[in-house]
Image 1: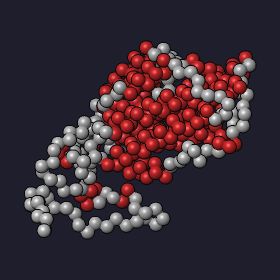
Image 2: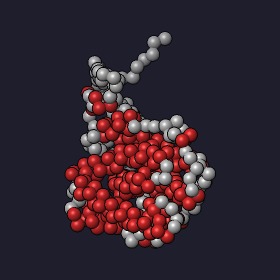
Image 3: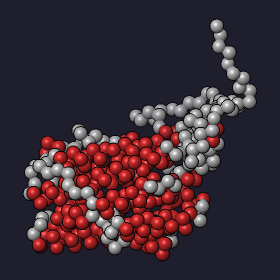
Length: 347
């Protein structure tokens, strides 16, 4: 019995004859898929388009889905397809791409400091995993590339949770102390619901600062295996910051009034950070131990100086990124100071 097809006269016509050629050695690239109706990214995605892929011909009876993030300006950046392709090429395996067998016993004070830092890292990486996962479900599927990028970020952060957990357990130490101050700080970020505010706070202020911390930890790591872990995690974070910078710059270009709202978002979170009384003393001590190479008074003093230099670099880099996305110098300085506070918080 022949199936009777619906009358599609008022649905619109699908594309036909589309051919996306594979790139030599790379297969079909997402950057080449902006073609035909699939290449038309709407400024405002209609609710009745549901979960259909951009470019599909949609049954008018499709129920409304009402994704909260349905405007292109809220999520888009012109290089989003580049970032997705980079994310795929940058994936690594926390089980096989780390030279675990090369780990050697460390002095107890250095191993304890590494384990404390890894414990802190895991907290931050859970936040950096859960918040994009939460935001991802709010984004209309018409912005396919953004959805795919956020999914790659979730995968990255899950891998970071895995690798820092393994490092804390791999070399005679173990997971260490968790401070309520850190938990309050992270909770203030996880409660964010507005996509642009959350992206600004996470990708630019949070992960942007985190990149400087990872760079510092790579430099002061007491062994090459641990240094490689921080280096590889930092490479992933660079993609996330890259999205945040280009996305916020795109949004500000189309909506200059956004400056005031993002300033308010930074101020609102600063209130949480003040309540949390700054960063974890356990982490501060561990950073100084690693920076000085041990726990003698001379080493701790030297380590504290290195940590002060780290905080200065964090502030300078935050200001640089804020200028890059379109803030003026005074606002950039104020926002960076709000985020850093008297005692720096990393997320």
